[in-house]
Image (cartoon, rainbow, N blue to C red; front, side, top):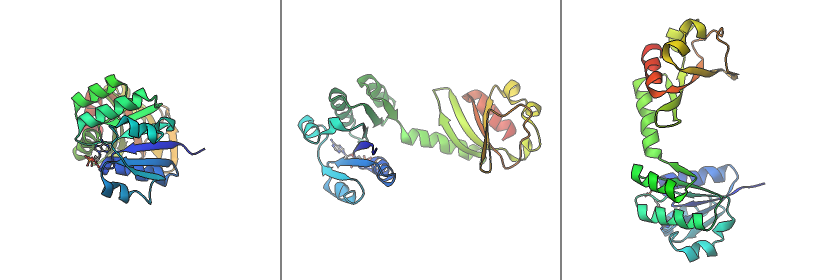
Length: 218
Ligand code: ADP
């Protein structure tokens, strides 16, 4: 069954979500105040409407309460983003994802009851910083303020050695939860698993431990 989504605010972030969901065959209602933006999405989204999301009557008339998941991607106008989120919550939307502009905005959105608050610029900044530290860091996902998951290329320092040789858990306090080897994924690898140079390791741990691991082994 097709899932229904609404994307409010068709800037770079909302626009990209709208394109991707539509490309995946999802039914998307795209909404923006700006006529030019809406016109850009007429042929992409299932429905594209010019509307102000801070107007509760507009939201009701659009039947937004029947939509499973609404993404609020309003940029700089923090007040409009918060008001929209509050109204969506009151209308009983099951899942609301909101883009936050800063930490203060993020806190309020969580208090209002947004289900997911995303901070794409901050998160992408962190990912890129890790990638700049080492070209072998392929991806970086923040789990909490002080824990993350990183995806790293094994490289020559690890090649030919087993997890027990490298003693990653005792030495760095991190865990290798999976190894990607070409098309194969070895989940929960054994301590005796030998690492190949082209392997990709998925490592979980506290940020301070991951950063020691990155400095010494990656
Ligand atoms: P990004 O940083 O993702 O590019 P922008 O600030 O450029 O974000 O885009 C935010 C979009 O949200 C703009 O297209 C703007 O017209 C739209 N927007 C702002 N306020 C409202 C509102 N009340 N209702 C609908 N759309 C809005």
